[in-house]
Every structure is written in C-alpha cells, then in structure tokens.
Length: 442
Image 1 (tube, rainbow, N blue to C red):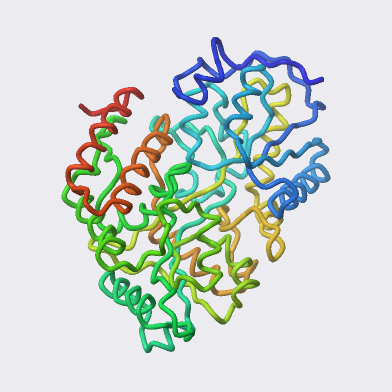
Image 2 (cartoon, rainbow, N blue to C red; image 1 turned 30 degrees about the vertical axis):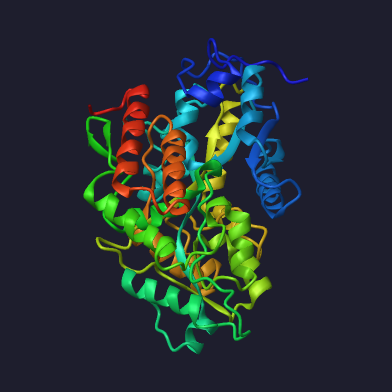
C-alpha cells in the first residue's frame, strides 16, 4: 500500500474535472525518503511504443542514479483517473502529459513548483520549450522533455501526377485541394478523394487544436494578452473571422475537406490519409513511422505550411514532466526530470524507428540531424523553431479549447450559420471563462 499524501485542502474529483479552481498550495510537508520508489504515469497506450520508450528511459535513469521507477501507461480517461487518485490523496510522483495541462494542474494544487536551480540541465533547455511550461509570473511548474510542431503532409505521387507545385500560400493550398478532390489523383476513375483531411471533432477539443494552424497564420487568435497577465477574447476580431471564413469555405463552398470531418478525432483522420482518401494532412511528426509503413515513404512529402495572410505560424506542442505534490521523494522527482532533459536522456527518448517519446529535442545540445539523419525530421525542427506557436499558459486552457472546437466544428457542419454571429457568441463564452479564472482584461 502506498501512503496517503497531503495535496491540498478540500480537493474533490468534481473540482478537478469541472472547475479547475485552486485547491490550495501544493503540499510540501511530507516526510522525505530518497529510497522511496517513484510512481510514474504517462499518457500513452498501454503496451504500445510510447510505454516501451518510457520504460527504456526509466531503466536508464535507474542505472544512472539508483532511483527506482514504476511506469504506468494510461490513455483512456487519463484525467479522470488522475482526479480519482487526487481524491484519495495518493497522487503518482511523476506525470508525463501534454504541456497544455500545466495551468490546470498548477491551479488545482496538484503539482509543486520546480526550482530551476535544482535541475542541473535546465540551463540547456531551449527558451521556446522552457517558456511553454512557465506561468505568467515566470514560475516553472513542468519540465519540457519533447516538442513538436505541425507540417503539411502531401501525397507527392498525386501532386506530381496532376502537375502541381508544392503550395506556398493559402490560394495555392486551396487550388491543390480542389485538384486532389476533382482530378482523380489515384486513377481509379471514381470521385472518392478529398483534398484535405481535417480533425474537426469536438471530442477533447480536436477541432480547435487542428484549426489553430490556420487561425494564427491568418493573424487571428483565441485570446489575446492585454498586459499584466490579463487576456481578452479574440475570435470575433476581423482577422479571426476572416481565417475562420476562409477555412470554412474549404468545406462549405469548395467541398475539399473529407466527408464526416466534424465527427472525426485524430485516429479516424490518420486512417483517412493512409487509406488514400485524402491528399493533404496537417499533423505533427509522430506519424511518420506509421505512414512510412502504411503508405510508403516515397508516396508522400513533408513540407512547411503555406504562408497565411499574416505568417506561417503553426501549432507547437510539447510533453512535460510534472512533479506531483505530496511526493515522499522530491529528490527523485528532480533527478528524473533532470535526466530526461539532459542530452543523454533526450537521445534515449529519441531512440528507435517508432518506439520513441521525444519527437523534437528540447535540449540545445542535441542536434536532431545527428540523431535522426532523415531530413524530414530536420524540416519539422526548423518549422518548430521558426513558426511554432504554443497556446498560452493560462490557469485552464481546456474550456477555451473546447468552446472554440464546438463553434468551429458547428460552422463547418452547418453552412447556413453566420460566421461573425457565431464567433461573437463564442467570445462571450470566452469572456466568462477568463473572468472565472481571474485573468479577464474586462
């Protein structure tokens, strides 16, 4: 039996899952034992490549430091299961999860602040990755260990067959999407291909996640910082409205987005692209091994997203190591985080053709071209460095993402809706969310 841990006063499962309200400061008054084994939770499929890679990293860490680690992989209902353990006052010691969880976990009192002075290799982190884990006050509540950004995957064989060039701007992207939809690029004589596959399901806010690659490039934003750690909603600004309308027209007027997109989470869109039902896909690098196997490496290409009306910004994401509150082995927590972000730890996390947990390194001393000579990975790294755009570290990003996904998905699903009116309604919701979190500029 693991000992119960103090993690804050009055913390309940409903507060964790629904409100995101602060449960008090993360507990630090637990008796320490450097020999206590570390329980590590990672959000990945049990038995899959991610679990294998995490265990490989843990084993290398144990060998290097002597600290013991027990790895548990959970994918379905990860947040709910974490909330249940919080309600039992028995959190795991370490959680490896999305960087967008940093604000939520901090505001719930589930993580402790990370003292950079105790993390030897923190000075080697890229500024971009480090900032993604900092709150507006500059304090660090997560350690980045992997980064990624979106690129455009194109069926190269289709593009060359139709005599088209790699798109450099939105107009050329739309033109290529139309050609893939109407030009029978697979040569089967049927009208059964789409120009673009898009993840527009409302589940877990997928539509917002996907559309961000177009919103930011068009000069729009979900929320805009107004100074002093305050934000204002931005989905009804002229730039955001124009970006939404342009993207919506791909589905409502040009009919180049795959059928059923508004109900599709990422697994379904992955299958659509690899099944030869769509010619373009905006996604991160983690699918390269899968598509190399299912499609063939020679069938598709990886290129930067075309220039939008403002820039070529794309969604930057990352995975972070969270030091959970109430651990009896804080020294072990810090040691694991330090090992994972070191050059050696990063290279271990990048090992293998598919069983890896580090997409793009966050340590400045790791050259991806040396670890992965495949030039497509360098393309992703360059995109991340030049155009990667993280979501802001606010107390709880989840409701912003979810409300935006609901609206974007609805606008693509129902072409009769008024774009400006729906986005104005969305901004009203976002204002309420920002006010609830105490960061509204109004």
